[in-house]
Length: 135
Image (cartoon, rainbow, N blue to C red; front, side, top):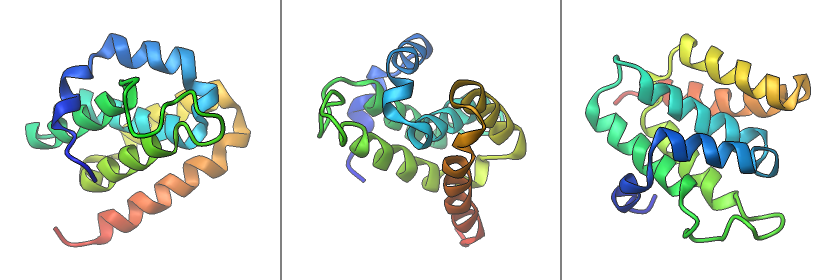
């Protein structure tokens, strides 16, 4: 995973929700769920600042229009974003609790409907594997 510290400045709650509003459907259920898990983890007082820096870097990359593959590129524009988001999730997996998952799942289901369940389950499965690894 590349150095995301330069993207921390790109992050703000407002810019996150603006990006979601404009691109959620185009980004797809997996990217949106990963981003929401990170967003809700960032809001949690249980998550330490070091993990929050990782989260802000990943969300800043997601928000930034200047990344490895421009988001407007048909078919693959959000592939790099998903990779960065999942990488950050795996890094901070031990802080993703049931409450964070429930908030993110609720939002994704509201936006994408029950058909998004497979995308959510795939991300949760990867998180489960990361949680099982010793730090």
